Each structure stands twice: as structure tokens, then as C-alpha cells.
Image (cartoon, rainbow, N blue to C red; front, side, top):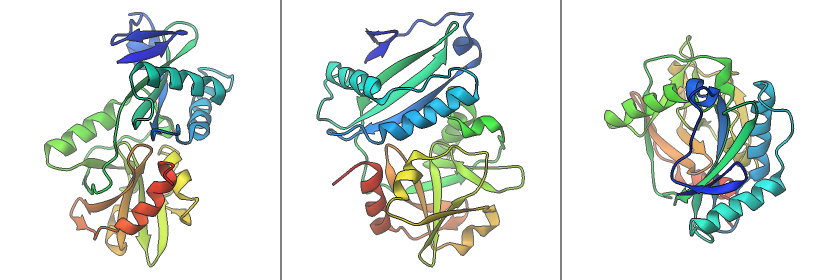
Length: 258
């Protein structure tokens, strides 16, 4: 894979200082974006979230320019033969010295419009203000996913210490009841660019949601920037009928489809 880092293109491997915070502590944040073959979806929203994380974590203070990253992403797509092909874009900003150095990658990715998700309830808890940022120290979320898939699930649902719903390991959660759409209200989850896009076509409100509230909902969904919105058919021991029609509507907004 060809990537962009420190103002130039490289391939396959990135050298990190053994003394740098990126290597030692995973100091950095990242974003995952979707390129649908025509458009880099919601680049401004992703850069706004990335900049907010860098500022709040005292890693950088200048805003990231959409025009600059649009040019860089276009170059990386071209070098990887992905122009006019759907792709997953990642922007990593990590501390490997005294200043943040962005790294941009691109790889093929085609969302599955028929996929449904079964979610395991993660038995461990991980509640931190860092959960409001997409940090490169992502081990808890990655291990939750690995355990879930090893046990036949597709993803994991994360809870706080009081068994309130937070999010899935790499996605936002959304629930429907009597035609109303509700997402968990908490300061311990990542602000979702996918939810932001879905809110353009759905009326979504936030409420604290306990694990015991699941049985009161008609439908459940999972959302992120590269899958769109997909039906959830199982969370732990609670089953939901899939709602594909609502997912199709929201996915078009998330993945910038006509």
C-alpha cells in the first residue's frame, strides 16, 4: 500500500522512533473516511472532529485544511489505483517527535448493502474521557471486537459502569421505537460523523439508555462512515427484526449516494 507521510509518498512500512510517544504510548488520533468512487464523504466533518481531538489533547492547535487533505487523498488514491473505485481512507495524526505528522492511507472497500449485525455485550468496562476521541490507543475496542467475532458475533456493544449503553466497538448505536429514533446520551462515546449525516434524513434524539431498555425498542441499528447504517438483529440475548428500508435511506446520506 502506498501512503503519504511527512510530505512524500512511501510504501508498506513507516519508521517510528523508539523514543517517540506514538510508539511508546499510542499517542495520536485518527479518522476513517469513505470514498465512494466520486466523493470523499464528509471530509469537513471528519477534519473538524480530528482537529477538536488534537486541540483538546494538546497535540496541535492549527485547524486541518480540507483543501490540503483533499489533494493528498486524491494523490494517494491515484497511486494505489483507486480513482473511481470505492475505498477506505485513513488519516492518522500521531506524535513521533515534537510535532504531529499526518499519515494518509487508502485501501479498497465496498460496503455490503445486505449485511446485518449481531452484537455481543462486552463484559469488560472502559470508561474514560479519551473515549470521546478516536485515539490510536484503540486496544480495548480492538480486543472487544476480536472476542466478539471469536464467539460468532459481528461486533461488540460497550457499556459504562452502570450498564448504560455507550456505542459499538467502532460504530454508533441507534434504536427505533414507534417511529422515533434514539441514540445513547453519554460523554463517554465518540461523536459520530455517521449519526450526524443520518440526522439529515432522520430525526434523532439522545437519551440515556440502560441495557435493560433494549426490549422496549422495535429496531436497532449500527452506523459508521464506511458501512453506512445497517440493521442489528441481536444484542446479547435481545433480538430485533431487521429494518432495511430505514437503513437504505440513512446509508445514502452517510455514503453520499444519489
